[in-house]
Image (cartoon, rainbow, N blue to C red):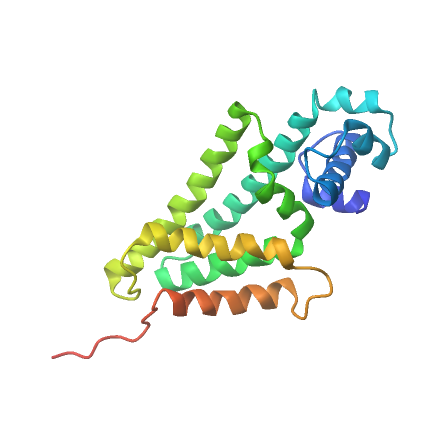
Length: 209
């Protein structure tokens, strides 16, 4: 991972040394897991002394929290952007899935840490991230419920369906690599179609009596 990538991933994080530490943390947590990673591992990967980490992050847990919070804020923004520009439930869910899946594929290393190291967060930090996750799920659930009300989705429980939709996207980070057959965008489009079929999407207009 490069400095330019760190700026792309976390444009609001300053200074650049803090972004370098976040990148190093992502790589270390993804390779070793949070608990097996030491602050020395992270600082060394960033080309710094262990003491330098504490200038920007008071603990290893604070570094994980920064990575996880930013990742969830970014995916929440993706979902909110779709809802803001599209009103049709079918198109909304299609575009949400396309963007959500593509993000988890394109940023698969970051996403693995964001999604699979949650239980390592301290209680207060976990609560912050959990609320971001609830906001994402609530939006998706409301889109599914709107589709059911409009008669274009045929699922019985929007709550369960929303979780299933998001789980499909999250799981991409577990297996996706740069060697994958499909690009992140192409994978997102395929998942979008799969989700529509899963929800029993009906896009035809019922015939008049």
